[in-house]
Length: 254
Length: 152
Image 1 (cartoon, chains in turn green, orange):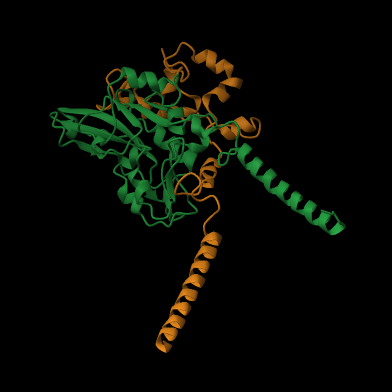
Image 2 (tube, chains in turn blue, brown):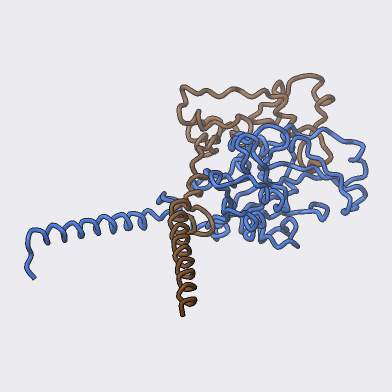
């Protein structure tokens, strides 16, 4: 085969093009899309949260911190996390009296009329970051998903605002943001935990009632928490694979 | 034979329409569906990056304590030692970034103290609680209790 000028130019053009494509692909692989940050490896984590009801004092610091950190609307019906107060009269776990004025944002006014003769406690709630999440299953467009590190996230540019997921969540953890008209929910402070920080709610909890944990890390304190406490998830009968583990959870909590 | 030929013509037209439709679908789908959709599951994998984009508002206790070691020392033996700085002082990542320009406001003691320590039946019994109306006879909490070391 003779190599004339035309052939040489064509071949070198082809090789150049191929190199560019390969280089691009290699860059893609090395960058480890989609996390792109070499310091955070998505596949090394499986995030969960531990909540100790016996330590929660209902101060509402978590609710306030969450709204600040995540720019959640301040109106009383939009929460990524909130605190409920339970009064269980006469130990009747079928009929608890539950209140959460402003989600616990401003604290809890005393209710002596239901407190008398009741068992009383606070329950902090948030997205349970289910491994088999009902909200993800019903999304018609793939705008919500379980990330490879076990966090249920929302793609706000893809969400239609159809509200299927709001209805599907058995824990009432989703709302439509009145400013954007798309769904919003707890991201487990994904922007923080992927930077090595804890969530805003865990950061400010004065008694350590909430604890972020990485179930893939054998040395994470959550492992000891799960071993040494009697733990339960909310609505276990729904088999959602919830990853918010409660210690001292009363049967009246739904 | 002639009728058969006519039928074939109809079928060919249909097939051509079908192929054109299919091509349009493939092209439109390629244009409309983001390239990274379906990489990791039925979603846009770059949505994970979107969720990471937010800047933290709370700097985190470790960052505070890097500068304010005098407060760490003052609190060391106190029951308040385990409480993160920003639980009372608020989100201060901006202050951590430019300490001289963004100055934190001192939180008002009274509403802050009672948000944890006001008596409530639902609060666990081990936790120190007071009826604020009776406890201090109108005096501010920090007249007797130093917030960083509340033990009297």
